[in-house]
Image 1 (tube, rainbow, N blue to C red):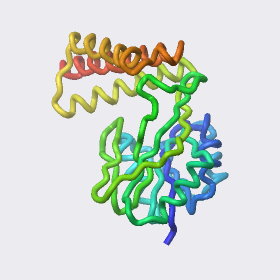
Image 2: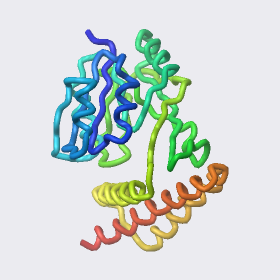
Image 3: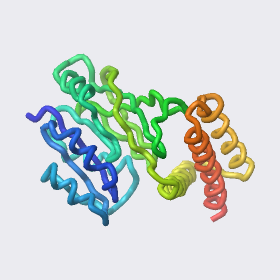
Length: 249
């Protein structure tokens, strides 16, 4: 049986994909599930793996990640986003982790790059995410956005070397994702029976900015810390504005 499968879902993800796949070329297999990319994503993927599959029936991040998980053949799974990179020190830790029997899953810290700057505050550091797990021990929630890996049994350990995360490279990309994430989040809230209002939109937006910039010391991340706080505020504000109008429909 294979020891480690790396799984990714992609859509027009060419920007940092080469770095991502090159950093896990040592894994037993790499599996990609693409949602209909129109850039060089598929061509880049095929340089590193023959296991490139397609599913354009988009039902959210959680559903799509469970779909790609179903293709994996290894005992252990490493789930990555196309803008994440595994440095050599973390590679060594992962290779050691999959040899042990004590833990079902491991969480990893992320060091994220935002608009050309590595972010060390703003709630983005150390930013632990559970990404390495036994195939029979966890699955992803079916959330449309902000899906979570749900460990069904056993203990979760911690790896110490950070994973590198290349987030937004331009204001245009930031605005596009702000719009998409606020829409998906509003749809998810509406499906759960939640209500939106202008008062909620203003309150959540102001709180998101204050929490990011002041409580989580985003001001120490300079200009980019301020931009990140504004972006978080916009996502929160538009989530509840969009939810308000979804409720009216």
